[in-house]
Length: 170
Image 1: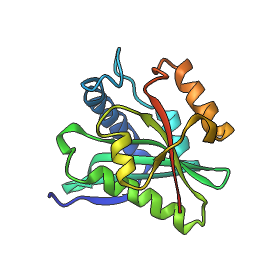
Image 2: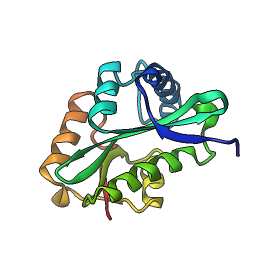
Image 3: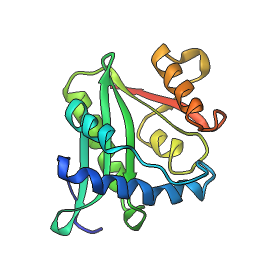
Image 4: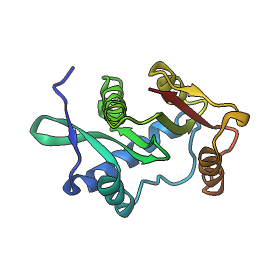
């Protein structure tokens, strides 16, 4: 595997993250997880995540960003909101390293655990997170926070039957 360095993201990386996310959209489209025009997290939302949350970047040689993952801390939980690796760099363990870095940060902060929402059927989403110890939550086990997030995703156009909330306790 190519030498990859993980470090906290800086504001000058945010535009590159949008490009990575747009490129990754096509990988999601190939599984049916998304349709329509490619979309990416706004620079404002990435900036807020960088300032108020935890945002790690993966860099190839010469500090070229190839992936990123970010999370907020809410209700004593680490909530992973975004994780993307450029398609040219996927399947090399970079996403796993990024998520593990977020999880380690949450553990260091003494949080209860980590949560996320993702596509139920894309092979590199829910199964990937399950391999990291996350479990799919059934409807009756969803916290009000996770219910609200899933509802907001439906309003934004994501197919509710494809969406699932997952969590793991530290």
